[in-house]
Image 1 (cartoon, rainbow, N blue to C red):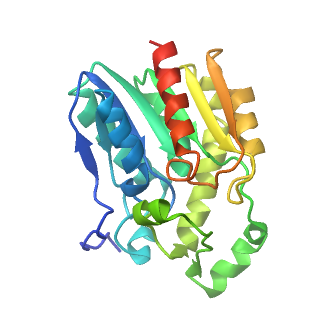
Image 2: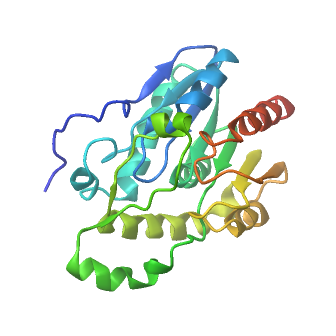
Length: 251
């Protein structure tokens, strides 16, 4: 079955903010949409970056649409966006949230990306039910998504699915395994930001990425109060400042 032609959810549209010859590719997370990268994108645009935030295949429409995709489709969306941005910019920083962080790292292995920023990227997922995934997928195609309380600002910009396709979850696990084996090929300057108290990704994921990348120019920043979507949560201004500092220091 091919991907259906469905209407994009309001707020889930990709966005392009033209600026200088420095480009920022913003990659959203699993079951999410470009909206969760919007505030960061506007911040970087004020710093004169050309910002492009693609909508990954199967996202921002319906969970049924996403169930027809795999991580290679999602990475294909990133590749398309990268080539569009590379045609306009002399250098590119890839910035990914959650699964988007994994896709940013994968892009850094394969393409000419100058800098990488990984936000809440999973190597270990804090979901005990994953052990039952092979059995659960025999009886159901989707599971309800557990939602944490969010601030008004975060809720406004968090356009995402309320159900998770189990086929897509299996593919996410394959992506984690693939990127885990590729970390020693990532040589670009790397900023990793991770909350110590979030409940979606096990925080030690950030330390694992830090310890296994090839490059020596790397920094790990720990947050103390945020949930998983650090681009929207209460410490987002700290996240933006750390990103600004990293981009300046690695010029």
